[in-house]
Length: 94
Image 1: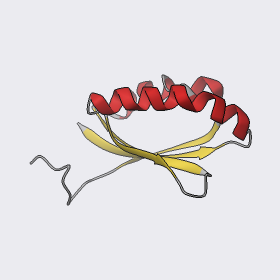
Image 2: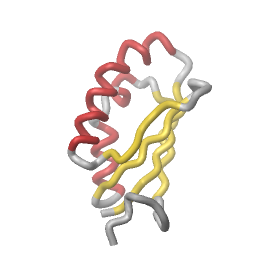
Image 3: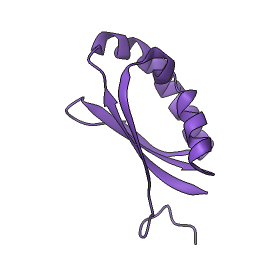
C-alpha cells in the first residue's frame, strides 16, 4: 500500500459544489470506514481540500477519485496527486 496526499482545488461554481458535497462526504466517509481515507477536510479559506488516501497504487487511487461524486459533477478544477512517504506519526504500522 502507498499513501497519497491529494489536494483538491475547488472550481468557481460554489453553489453546484455545495449541492454535491453531501454525496461527496458520504463517499469519503465510506472510504474512511474501510481505511482507504486516513484524513480529509477543506481548507479554512474554502479554496480547496486535502485528502490523505491509503491505496495499492496510483492507478487504484485514480479509480477511487473517479468514483467520487465531485468528479462527474466537475466541481474540482485540479486534483494534485502526490505520493507521500510518511516517516513519523501514528499512521505508521511498521
